[in-house]
Length: 322
Length: 90
Image (cartoon, rainbow over all chains, first blue to last red; front, side, top):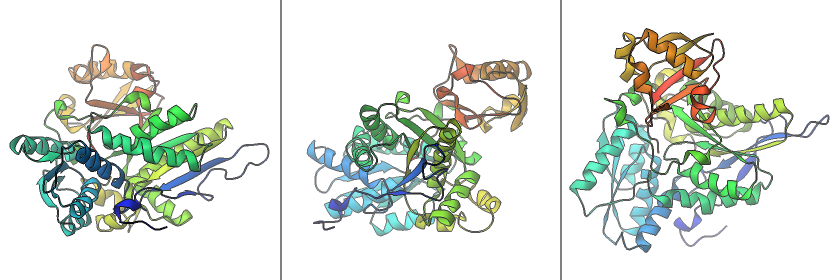
């Protein structure tokens, strides 16, 4: 496939079946199949699903005249959105300032730095909530900077409504479930809305990472954060997945299907298998599509990829792994 | 009906710093009522006007109760209830 530039190669990612991990790949003995399908979003320009919302937020801001050549973009991010923005900013001539929690992997920082982004670290305690709060403060201090704000920018969800959703429907018209990670909520909101409008009865399932205690170290409950994009009515179910199950499934994905994914994908697979096994028990056909948000490269230093599951769980405690 | 409830750091002053506390009840609402008798003040931190606080998430056996009946969500014997503040990702 040929493209005029890296930016033009966005999307159109493969959807691959998982014949070994699926509870029942073929219809057999009068029972319908229960299949798992992985959407490989690591096959995007910077290797994650975040290229979709990042580029969409930039192009919409350019079209609206909110972003002009030479401007400074500001964004709170735990990594992938920052990396996507950094690549686009480099190619388009913007300066990028990222506010990122200090408990994110070394690889993310290295990539951001290589792309020329400036990183402002926010405290580990409180995780991304603190990064969001610090970025909002910076935005107030620097009114000339443009905060695209992935948590509340409708362009984030729109990228999935017009991209991820239609791609899935074209590749898997028989889709029964869509499963993805819940962070900004953009993937689930955009893809979920599109699928609900086009596939009667489709289930939209969220897998939310459950971190170590440090990340929930808020000073009071009012420091809690629900992204402005979040609309509960789009979801059917929402699961909390801890690092033990996320790592266990991430390793299973490598062992059984050869797919080298990031830790958060393990959490998503865990929820996808939960939905698939429920359909299996009920004797219902299921075609469950789930998102592989990125590959494992950026997390090799976290300890998730070697040692026992318990070792990995200990190593990830306190880190933002999604 | 005995269940284990995980308490986030921020609410542990109400449970004598205990991370996990036992409780009983057949529904989440009943479990929270029971917790209140042992750890006074906890209910008000979780619920206002009969619904969960916006920035509090509660999971029964790892599933968000807002999708399973809210305070009427059934809790099985030996089940787990996890309380967490809402946090961002991305």
